[in-house]
Length: 308
Ligand SMILES: [Zn+2]
Image 1 (cartoon, rainbow, N blue to C red):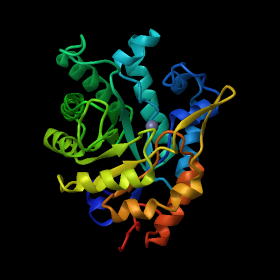
Image 2 (cartoon, rainbow, N blue to C red):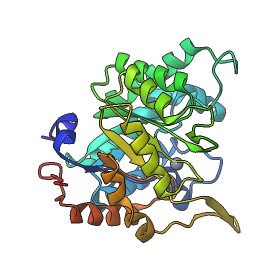
Image 3 (tube, protein in one colour):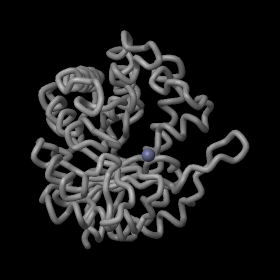
Protein backbone atom coordinates (compact mmCIF):
# COMPACT_ATOMS: atom_id res chain seq x y z
CA UNK A 1 0.00 0.00 0.00
CA UNK A 2 1.52 3.30 -1.09
CA UNK A 3 1.58 6.13 1.43
CA UNK A 4 -0.54 9.22 0.84
CA UNK A 5 1.44 11.45 -1.51
CA UNK A 6 0.50 14.77 0.10
CA UNK A 7 1.30 13.42 3.55
CA UNK A 8 4.65 12.11 2.30
CA UNK A 9 5.50 15.54 0.89
CA UNK A 10 5.24 17.12 4.32
CA UNK A 11 8.35 15.26 5.43
CA UNK A 12 10.00 13.94 2.27
CA UNK A 13 11.63 15.13 -0.92
CA UNK A 14 10.51 12.89 -3.77
CA UNK A 15 12.14 12.06 -7.07
CA UNK A 16 10.02 11.94 -10.22
CA UNK A 17 11.00 10.56 -13.61
CA UNK A 18 12.58 12.26 -16.62
CA UNK A 19 11.37 12.80 -20.16
CA UNK A 20 8.99 10.42 -21.89
CA UNK A 21 8.79 12.21 -25.26
CA UNK A 22 12.49 12.55 -26.05
CA UNK A 23 13.18 9.00 -24.80
CA UNK A 24 10.50 7.63 -27.14
CA UNK A 25 12.16 9.50 -30.02
CA UNK A 26 15.41 7.84 -29.06
CA UNK A 27 13.57 4.50 -29.10
CA UNK A 28 12.32 5.12 -32.63
CA UNK A 29 9.29 7.41 -32.44
CA UNK A 30 9.57 9.56 -35.55
CA UNK A 31 9.53 13.35 -35.26
CA UNK A 32 5.97 14.56 -35.81
CA UNK A 33 4.47 11.12 -35.14
CA UNK A 34 1.93 10.59 -32.37
CA UNK A 35 3.44 9.32 -29.12
CA UNK A 36 0.19 8.20 -27.45
CA UNK A 37 -0.37 5.56 -30.12
CA UNK A 38 2.65 3.73 -28.67
CA UNK A 39 0.51 2.91 -25.62
CA UNK A 40 -1.36 0.36 -27.76
CA UNK A 41 1.13 -0.32 -30.59
CA UNK A 42 4.33 -0.66 -28.50
CA UNK A 43 3.18 -1.24 -24.90
CA UNK A 44 6.33 -3.15 -23.97
CA UNK A 45 8.54 -0.20 -24.98
CA UNK A 46 6.48 2.15 -22.81
CA UNK A 47 6.58 -0.24 -19.87
CA UNK A 48 10.34 -0.73 -20.17
CA UNK A 49 10.86 3.04 -20.13
CA UNK A 50 8.75 3.35 -16.97
CA UNK A 51 10.69 0.45 -15.42
CA UNK A 52 14.00 2.13 -16.28
CA UNK A 53 12.91 5.27 -14.42
CA UNK A 54 11.65 3.21 -11.47
CA UNK A 55 14.95 1.35 -11.28
CA UNK A 56 16.79 4.68 -11.48
CA UNK A 57 15.01 5.69 -8.27
CA UNK A 58 11.96 7.64 -9.46
CA UNK A 59 8.98 7.25 -7.15
CA UNK A 60 6.62 9.22 -9.39
CA UNK A 61 6.06 7.91 -12.93
CA UNK A 62 4.49 10.02 -15.69
CA UNK A 63 2.04 8.46 -18.13
CA UNK A 64 2.66 8.72 -21.87
CA UNK A 65 -0.33 10.98 -22.47
CA UNK A 66 1.08 14.51 -22.75
CA UNK A 67 -0.76 15.17 -26.04
CA UNK A 68 -3.57 12.78 -25.24
CA UNK A 69 -6.37 15.32 -25.07
CA UNK A 70 -9.00 15.06 -27.81
CA UNK A 71 -8.10 18.38 -29.43
CA UNK A 72 -4.40 17.54 -29.71
CA UNK A 73 -5.19 13.99 -30.88
CA UNK A 74 -7.46 15.38 -33.61
CA UNK A 75 -4.32 16.71 -35.33
CA UNK A 76 -3.51 13.03 -35.97
CA UNK A 77 -7.09 11.95 -36.67
CA UNK A 78 -7.06 10.02 -33.37
CA UNK A 79 -9.72 11.95 -31.43
CA UNK A 80 -12.08 8.96 -31.37
CA UNK A 81 -9.42 6.92 -29.56
CA UNK A 82 -8.74 9.43 -26.77
CA UNK A 83 -10.32 7.33 -24.01
CA UNK A 84 -8.57 4.13 -25.12
CA UNK A 85 -5.13 5.77 -25.43
CA UNK A 86 -5.30 7.53 -22.05
CA UNK A 87 -6.57 4.47 -20.20
CA UNK A 88 -3.78 2.42 -21.76
CA UNK A 89 -1.19 5.05 -20.79
CA UNK A 90 -2.24 4.91 -17.13
CA UNK A 91 -2.56 1.13 -17.06
CA UNK A 92 0.98 0.67 -18.45
CA UNK A 93 2.53 3.04 -15.90
CA UNK A 94 0.60 1.39 -13.10
CA UNK A 95 1.74 -2.05 -14.17
CA UNK A 96 5.36 -0.88 -14.38
CA UNK A 97 5.14 0.89 -11.01
CA UNK A 98 4.06 -2.37 -9.35
CA UNK A 99 3.01 -0.49 -6.22
CA UNK A 100 6.46 1.02 -5.75
CA UNK A 101 5.72 4.40 -7.30
CA UNK A 102 2.83 6.79 -7.73
CA UNK A 103 1.42 7.14 -11.25
CA UNK A 104 0.97 10.69 -12.50
CA UNK A 105 -1.57 11.03 -15.32
CA UNK A 106 -0.06 13.60 -17.66
CA UNK A 107 -2.11 16.36 -19.26
CA UNK A 108 -0.35 18.82 -21.58
CA UNK A 109 -1.67 21.91 -23.39
CA UNK A 110 -4.61 21.46 -25.76
CA UNK A 111 -2.45 22.81 -28.55
CA UNK A 112 -4.14 26.08 -29.57
CA UNK A 113 -5.25 29.45 -28.28
CA UNK A 114 -8.34 30.20 -26.23
CA UNK A 115 -10.85 32.84 -27.29
CA UNK A 116 -10.51 35.75 -27.91
CA UNK A 117 -6.88 35.21 -29.01
CA UNK A 118 -7.81 31.99 -30.80
CA UNK A 119 -11.01 30.27 -31.78
CA UNK A 120 -11.32 27.63 -29.08
CA UNK A 121 -13.95 28.16 -26.39
CA UNK A 122 -13.02 27.74 -22.73
CA UNK A 123 -16.00 25.40 -22.20
CA UNK A 124 -14.71 23.06 -24.88
CA UNK A 125 -11.18 22.97 -23.43
CA UNK A 126 -12.60 22.32 -19.96
CA UNK A 127 -14.63 19.41 -21.30
CA UNK A 128 -11.66 17.98 -23.22
CA UNK A 129 -9.38 18.10 -20.15
CA UNK A 130 -12.10 16.65 -17.93
CA UNK A 131 -12.57 13.68 -20.23
CA UNK A 132 -8.81 13.09 -20.44
CA UNK A 133 -8.44 13.22 -16.66
CA UNK A 134 -11.36 10.82 -16.25
CA UNK A 135 -9.77 8.31 -18.65
CA UNK A 136 -6.37 8.56 -16.91
CA UNK A 137 -7.95 8.01 -13.49
CA UNK A 138 -10.03 5.10 -14.84
CA UNK A 139 -6.82 3.55 -16.16
CA UNK A 140 -5.22 3.71 -12.73
CA UNK A 141 -3.47 7.08 -12.34
CA UNK A 142 -3.00 8.07 -8.68
CA UNK A 143 -2.99 11.76 -9.48
CA UNK A 144 -3.15 14.18 -12.39
CA UNK A 145 -0.13 16.24 -13.45
CA UNK A 146 -0.73 19.23 -15.71
CA UNK A 147 2.44 20.10 -17.60
CA UNK A 148 4.13 22.75 -19.74
CA UNK A 149 1.33 25.31 -19.45
CA UNK A 150 1.95 28.88 -20.59
CA UNK A 151 -1.54 30.39 -20.20
CA UNK A 152 -2.96 31.20 -16.76
CA UNK A 153 -6.49 30.66 -18.06
CA UNK A 154 -5.65 27.27 -19.58
CA UNK A 155 -3.92 25.97 -16.44
CA UNK A 156 -6.91 27.14 -14.40
CA UNK A 157 -9.29 25.25 -16.71
CA UNK A 158 -7.16 22.11 -16.58
CA UNK A 159 -6.93 22.10 -12.76
CA UNK A 160 -10.66 22.66 -12.30
CA UNK A 161 -11.48 20.06 -14.96
CA UNK A 162 -9.22 17.45 -13.33
CA UNK A 163 -10.89 18.10 -9.96
CA UNK A 164 -14.35 17.75 -11.49
CA UNK A 165 -13.23 14.51 -13.12
CA UNK A 166 -12.55 13.15 -9.63
CA UNK A 167 -8.80 13.66 -9.18
CA UNK A 168 -8.01 13.62 -5.46
CA UNK A 169 -4.53 15.07 -6.04
CA UNK A 170 -3.48 17.51 -8.76
CA UNK A 171 0.00 18.77 -9.67
CA UNK A 172 0.34 21.71 -12.08
CA UNK A 173 3.45 23.12 -13.77
CA UNK A 174 3.98 26.10 -16.02
CA UNK A 175 6.88 26.69 -18.41
CA UNK A 176 8.93 29.88 -18.26
CA UNK A 177 11.42 31.65 -20.50
CA UNK A 178 13.84 34.47 -19.78
CA UNK A 179 12.27 37.93 -19.93
CA UNK A 180 13.49 41.49 -19.45
CA UNK A 181 12.01 41.57 -15.94
CA UNK A 182 12.99 38.05 -14.88
CA UNK A 183 10.97 35.09 -16.11
CA UNK A 184 7.69 34.89 -18.00
CA UNK A 185 5.79 32.18 -19.83
CA UNK A 186 5.32 32.61 -23.59
CA UNK A 187 1.92 34.08 -22.76
CA UNK A 188 3.52 36.64 -20.43
CA UNK A 189 2.66 35.04 -17.08
CA UNK A 190 5.11 35.87 -14.25
CA UNK A 191 6.02 33.37 -11.50
CA UNK A 192 3.81 35.33 -9.09
CA UNK A 193 0.83 35.21 -11.44
CA UNK A 194 1.50 31.54 -12.14
CA UNK A 195 1.70 30.63 -8.45
CA UNK A 196 -1.51 32.51 -7.74
CA UNK A 197 -3.37 31.03 -10.73
CA UNK A 198 -2.38 27.44 -9.92
CA UNK A 199 -2.89 27.84 -6.18
CA UNK A 200 -6.30 29.52 -6.51
CA UNK A 201 -7.53 26.96 -9.04
CA UNK A 202 -6.89 24.32 -6.38
CA UNK A 203 -3.71 22.51 -7.42
CA UNK A 204 -2.15 20.59 -4.52
CA UNK A 205 1.42 20.92 -5.80
CA UNK A 206 2.62 23.64 -8.16
CA UNK A 207 5.83 24.22 -10.07
CA UNK A 208 7.71 24.64 -13.31
CA UNK A 209 8.97 22.31 -16.02
CA UNK A 210 10.72 22.40 -19.39
CA UNK A 211 12.00 25.72 -20.81
CA UNK A 212 14.57 25.12 -23.52
CA UNK A 213 16.74 28.13 -22.75
CA UNK A 214 16.73 27.81 -18.96
CA UNK A 215 19.77 26.82 -16.91
CA UNK A 216 19.47 24.90 -13.64
CA UNK A 217 20.14 28.20 -11.85
CA UNK A 218 17.14 29.77 -13.61
CA UNK A 219 14.93 27.02 -12.23
CA UNK A 220 16.29 27.79 -8.75
CA UNK A 221 15.21 31.42 -9.21
CA UNK A 222 11.75 30.40 -10.41
CA UNK A 223 11.29 27.93 -7.54
CA UNK A 224 12.19 30.68 -5.05
CA UNK A 225 9.81 33.10 -6.78
CA UNK A 226 6.95 30.57 -6.67
CA UNK A 227 7.77 29.85 -3.02
CA UNK A 228 7.08 33.50 -2.17
CA UNK A 229 3.49 33.24 -3.38
CA UNK A 230 2.34 29.80 -2.28
CA UNK A 231 2.57 27.56 0.76
CA UNK A 232 1.97 24.43 -1.34
CA UNK A 233 4.73 21.93 -2.16
CA UNK A 234 6.76 22.76 -5.27
CA UNK A 235 7.76 20.48 -8.14
CA UNK A 236 10.54 21.28 -10.65
CA UNK A 237 11.50 19.37 -13.81
CA UNK A 238 14.27 21.09 -15.82
CA UNK A 239 15.31 20.28 -19.39
CA UNK A 240 18.70 18.89 -20.34
CA UNK A 241 19.50 22.11 -22.19
CA UNK A 242 18.62 23.37 -25.67
CA UNK A 243 17.72 20.81 -28.32
CA UNK A 244 20.29 20.81 -31.13
CA UNK A 245 19.94 19.16 -34.50
CA UNK A 246 22.94 16.95 -35.26
CA UNK A 247 22.40 15.29 -38.65
CA UNK A 248 18.86 13.98 -38.34
CA UNK A 249 19.06 13.52 -34.59
CA UNK A 250 17.95 15.92 -31.85
CA UNK A 251 20.59 16.12 -29.13
CA UNK A 252 20.39 17.57 -25.61
CA UNK A 253 23.85 18.47 -24.40
CA UNK A 254 23.46 18.89 -20.66
CA UNK A 255 24.98 15.78 -19.11
CA UNK A 256 23.48 13.82 -16.23
CA UNK A 257 26.56 14.73 -14.13
CA UNK A 258 26.31 18.49 -14.74
CA UNK A 259 22.60 18.56 -13.89
CA UNK A 260 22.91 16.25 -10.88
CA UNK A 261 25.53 18.54 -9.33
CA UNK A 262 22.85 21.24 -9.04
CA UNK A 263 19.90 19.15 -7.90
CA UNK A 264 20.55 19.84 -4.22
CA UNK A 265 20.25 23.57 -4.91
CA UNK A 266 16.74 23.06 -6.28
CA UNK A 267 15.78 21.39 -3.00
CA UNK A 268 17.44 24.15 -0.96
CA UNK A 269 15.48 26.69 -3.01
CA UNK A 270 12.26 25.05 -1.86
CA UNK A 271 11.43 22.20 -4.24
CA UNK A 272 9.82 19.10 -2.72
CA UNK A 273 9.76 17.08 -5.94
CA UNK A 274 12.58 17.03 -8.49
CA UNK A 275 12.61 15.31 -11.87
CA UNK A 276 13.51 16.08 -15.47
CA UNK A 277 11.86 17.26 -18.68
CA UNK A 278 12.99 17.17 -22.35
CA UNK A 279 16.32 15.45 -22.90
CA UNK A 280 16.60 13.90 -19.45
CA UNK A 281 17.04 10.12 -19.28
CA UNK A 282 17.02 7.34 -16.69
CA UNK A 283 20.75 8.06 -16.19
CA UNK A 284 19.94 11.68 -15.22
CA UNK A 285 17.37 10.41 -12.72
CA UNK A 286 19.78 7.80 -11.32
CA UNK A 287 22.36 10.52 -10.59
CA UNK A 288 19.68 12.85 -9.20
CA UNK A 289 18.80 10.03 -6.81
CA UNK A 290 22.43 9.71 -5.72
CA UNK A 291 22.53 13.44 -4.96
CA UNK A 292 19.26 13.36 -3.05
CA UNK A 293 20.55 10.42 -1.02
CA UNK A 294 23.63 12.46 -0.18
CA UNK A 295 21.26 15.13 1.14
CA UNK A 296 19.98 12.62 3.63
CA UNK A 297 17.29 10.73 1.79
CA UNK A 298 16.91 7.00 1.57
CA UNK A 299 15.19 5.42 -1.41
CA UNK A 300 11.61 4.25 -1.38
CA UNK A 301 8.45 6.10 -0.40
CA UNK A 302 8.33 4.51 3.04
CA UNK A 303 11.62 5.88 4.29
CA UNK A 304 12.43 8.72 1.92
CA UNK A 305 13.01 11.24 4.66
CA UNK A 306 15.16 14.23 3.87
CA UNK A 307 16.60 16.05 6.83
CA UNK A 308 18.01 19.35 5.67
ZN1 LIG B 1 10.18 19.59 -21.76
